[in-house]
Image (cartoon, rainbow, N blue to C red; front, top):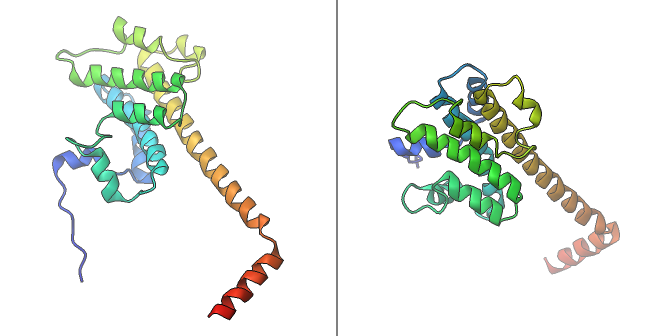
Length: 201
């Protein structure tokens, strides 16, 4: 039986999972001199992508169909960057400081995406919002000699790296716990269990 091909709609493009090559292309694009609107949106996408990976790893059902229901436009409980940030905080994935930093990225992204006039990163309101970032997301070294747009990109990179680090630490912890459980079972007990199974068979 041939597999059915799912017909994508335009709105589905925003919810497709990024492949490794796509993520690399996204990071490369951010390193270039882009229009401020593109920078604001792509910067937020990098942080949101890593947040999605973490959130998805927390759910028992990790299949694409379930994830699509969670992020669908109208009824999905994770249909916005804002809801993903709140859920990540509620699940204890990160602390209040990182939640606030992610909110700053979201607010700046929204300002550029929804503004009726062209705004720049050196707008006092944008600079003020960047000034609320924690030192972990935007170290003080980025305040001298760096343009506000570069600060924003750096902040998005830092948050992405931190979210990826949380994911790696969780995976290492899970692997360590699994290895401990395996080592806790003595070889004699395994042999006894195997003999018991063979008798029942």
